Image 1 (cartoon, helix red, strand yellow):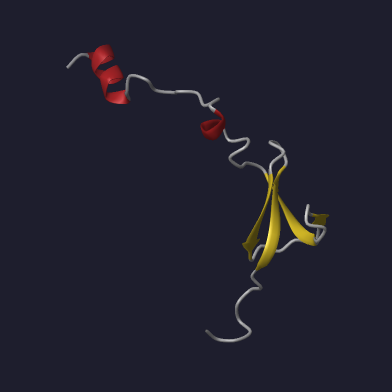
Image 2 (image 1 turned 180 degrees about the horizontal axis):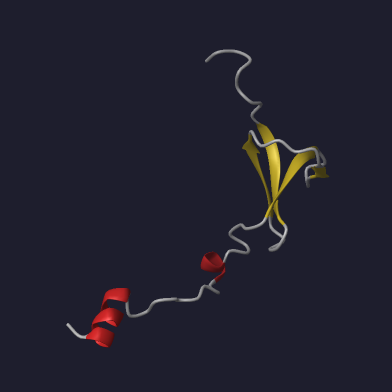
Amino acid sequence: MQQGIHPEYRPVVFRDKTGGLSFLTRSTAASERTVEWADGRTYPVVDVETSSASHPFYTGRARLMDTEGRVELYRRRYGG
């Protein structure tokens, strides 16, 4: 690996603004903001819009848009 061309890989907290979930992982994502974690250390925090705590697929609030299927709907409407 070449030295000096790769971004820094460090612990980062990802925080879901909608679902209230926060998790500590390692990433190259950069952030100016920091948060104090449960271990007493301060880590950069990246706010995300959607995670498994707020995404409809994972929470069970997903809507089923097409239960019959497009081909069946076409055949029923127009025959054939």
